[in-house]
Length: 561
Ligand code: OOB
Image 1 (tube, rainbow, N blue to C red):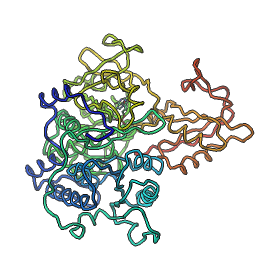
Image 2 (cartoon, helix red, strand yellow; image 1 turned 135 degrees about the vertical axis):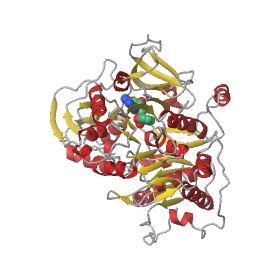
Image 3 (cartoon, protein in one colour; image 1 turned 45 degrees about the vertical axis):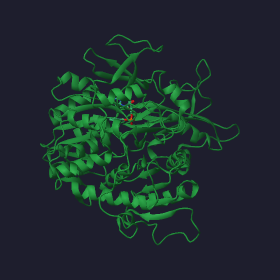
């Protein structure tokens, strides 16, 4: 197993294999199987092109040869930051065949995050898009490659600005385009790639929502990941006739595996990839491709339900409208049922593993009022009090879980693991839930230091670290506050260094942007305070405002996927 990943104990692994949960399937073989079964069926459609299963299979083989020709080998790490388009899927399948481990960065990530991912994983290559939404990902990748010694290659998806604009100075890394990798001039070897990956290998490093100063990476194996994918596809009713519209970033666990793009590929259906989920674009795609399944986060679901465009398009093909990533209130759920009929499915999942779904045929009150029940009969769920003692059904408590597709530890993070997992391997989700007698969970709160901004997770400690780096900031705390649209938004409370004027909201916002953090992590509001409130033991008290705000600067940001 990948050095730095925590294996499932042998006894449990044997059990999961014996039960048929873990099979010999790998991400590479999943697509090979689908291509053999339905060679000419459409696998992927994006704004630029459409690929059959055979096209996807061959593209993945060509790219796998290309990565091998660059010298990349099984177990190497590669940071992948590509937009939600067919190329991302081709790259993931190619890496999956090669046993090369992608670190899945989101398109929103910037210098601080991408550099951290590359450095922490010792990545040998970066695979990125070109200019998207006005941001030059190739330029960012070149900066990161120059700063992180392990990076030897930068591979750019769209025709790279890198080509022809190569710096004259000697560079410690080589730039390529993905098209170079596909072409025979890089390697004489063509045709099917001989899969190097084993089912027990780490298939990718997924990002955790995070609660700490640095993002944590989640090592998922082919076997555990694909078990959750196959079962998710079954639970969500996917088949060869299914058409899934991906509106959320595909690098996120929800849109990739719950059942997401991989669930659809497993079932032999079609994935339609959209750069965003705004009703005008998304509804037109639903009508045009007769979309059956779509995954939304609550703010996007509100926008869909309230959109006058609902009446302007034929949305009658929709069978399953998933909402997850953050809590969907009961009145919002009722409204979705009113507008979209009996299509709502609640999804409560986490990149660490456990995923819960409401099921087709569940009574209305279950679909409206709960976040579903776990995928697997082997998912162990404990609901406990502050002393890890079980609480009775119907009472709120901390959700702990262990099972065939939940990690036993983060990547290279033993100190954090000691807090995030119990001694017997249960993951402390940080979520407060109520479990009913039938095993359905309702999320009632959160005990972890995290802000859930409409499904996008923010670790306050990470943003506070960046704020404290400002020369005029003595201390800072970032807290979540209720927001009607997002569910929660982030407010930063900032203490100025004695003798300096407190930096204003716009100044701090620019500072954070220049530090290179994703826009969704930049607080919506900044307040200057004299001091931060502390708890009895002297820790910063995020639950309570500090004494007397001295000034406020408000400038809400629009939510972005
Ligand atoms: C999904 O994954 P992550 O890793 O971005 O975030 C996980 C956390 C959960 O621990 C919980 O705090 C929150 O997001 N969450 C929900 C929720 N779904 C996720 N809180 C309340 N209600 C829900 N329905 O967000 C994710 C991964 C796979 C599938 C779906 C979501």
